[in-house]
Length: 107
Ligand code: FES
Image 1 (tube, rainbow, N blue to C red):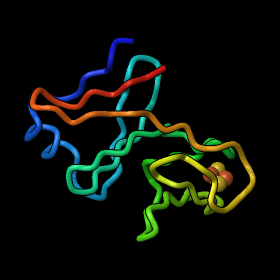
Image 2: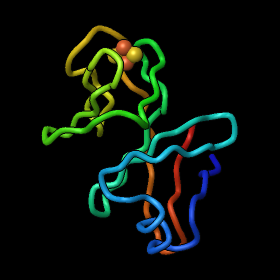
Image 3: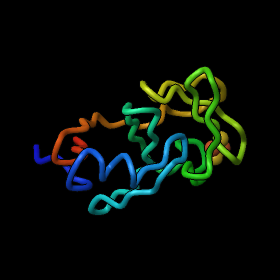
């Protein structure tokens, strides 16, 4: 598996992804949403698994949940599990912040 690569250094990535703001990232044909909390990075599908709303417009809460802007379903930002609502889980992707940038492992 070839990781998708973003940024050229750790500092680059930290600067390009403002903390607690969700950034949209195009990785090939995939639209991803990237959320940074400190140096912890969460990568997930930019489309809500319920009806496809844009999750880069989502809110996040202190419980580590992503709240969809459309029907307010809530997803665990680490596992993608549905915490509130009825739909499949949100696809989340493993990533690593390295000295040469962010590596995102897509299936
Ligand atoms: S589209 Fe996200 S909760 Fe309905």
